[in-house]
Image (tube, rainbow, N blue to C red; front, side, top):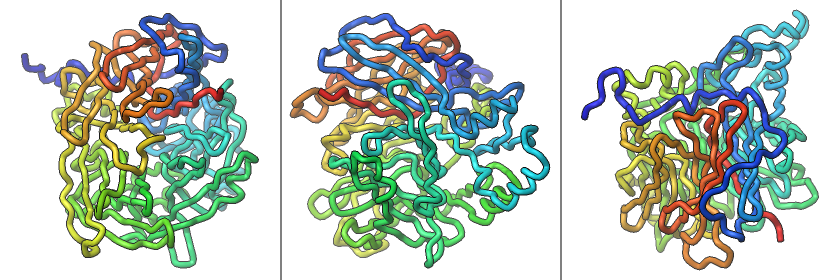
Amino acid sequence: MAADKDNLYPNCTTSVFLRSCDEEITTPLKGKTTGHIPSWMQGTLLRNGPGTLKVGSMSFDHVFDGSALLHSFKISEGSATYQCRFVRTDTYKRNQAANRIVVTEFATEAVPDPCHTIFDRFSAFFKPLEKLSDNTVVSVYPIGDEIYTFTESPIIHRIDPKTLDTLERKDLIKDLAIVNHSAHPHVLPNGDVINIGLSYTSWGMRHVVIHFPFSTKGNMFENASIVGSMKPRWQMHPAYMHSFGITENYFVLIEQPMTISLGTVMRNVLLDKPFASALQWYPDVETHIVLISRKTGEEVRRYRTETLFYFHVINAFENDHSLVLDLCTYKDAKILSGMYVKAMQTIQSNTDCAEWFRARPKRLEMPLEADTMSFVEAKLLADIGCETPRINYDKNNGRLYRYFYAISSDIDHSNPGAIIKVDTWTGEYKAWFEEDSFASEPVFVPEPNAQEEDAGILLCALLWGSHICRISLLLLDARTMLEVGRVTFDTPSPAPKCIHGWFLADRV
């Protein structure tokens, strides 16, 4: 039966992205457990994402602008508890004090802050970077023994994983002279952390690789250093990079034709305008894949491929005499337009929206002995919509792998809230779904002493279109994609959809 023109995607409930949490949960909430939670599963799943799209009578214009809300599922002795708290960023505190949006976000323009005098506003004009939002709404990662929330501005917040208290604000502009960074650093097996960003150097603007050497003494930031760099293809229009790859010998950067206009950025900062207008898409420009040597820190090879847009790298690895890069790709960058609140509210009558969201996993296999600037075809891994991909990270990040897990990106599918498992060797895939449910990014937790790559549990936060004050922790067997168990919580206010998370195993 065809969908009518005012209900094009009848199984897609975009309201799960537009919910606002009105009441934090500071005392762990007990839930109803069904099925079975393995006895070895002990730890905390932390998740981050936009928690409210409103401040007083005002609303944010884009999903990415919502105030950061942390979710915590504490798993112990066969059950789990749930908490959620807003990250106490400077932006959040200023907005709450004014009861309006007084800090400009990615796509939302602020109004004047009544708490600031005319002199404060005049002084702020000469310190434009201090006006930038520090709303770390995207992800959460460990740096050493500490846990931080991330966005793409170079401000991160240390949080207490037990209470979700915000403990500290770190300004990497001051520490490392970077003006932005990826929201997806890599945590290496030895505890080192690697990230990429943009930095002003004596050679001009550069894409840089930053190394945080592991320490248990809290000085990973003091010892951080830039260990690699590359010159942007366009000096005043560096590429937007949300994530990157890392292999045994290379840092893998994707220079896509979505660029950041530095001139527009400076104008927007001075005039307090949203960052979004500084992003520019070039539809007829090829994508470049750049390899930076982990030994020398220098660009050693560059490849060309089709015009594509991406947010997330799935994995990268070296295999024989090639480097393989897998990522979730779009034909263009219109997905960003689709995440505006008005676009999501009117999605059911937008005939183009399904194509905007239609990500596909693709593979680039780049011969390491080929001439630089060789063209490499991006080949389809599986014909299924995939986003927020995760792998068996501890075992396979930067190494040969077979499986990845993701959520569906096909809003016109009969089950748009599905969780997907893709076999990269065969192109086959499995899916778990439940009617009216919408899953978060699946986080893989390996079984103790597991030998098989997919021997483990997928942890997901699960929402429903018809139950706005309910959230579940779902456990799936990663091998079979069958449900193992779940814990369901009825919340005192709407449960918003989160974006990215990290599992912290309890130390034995």
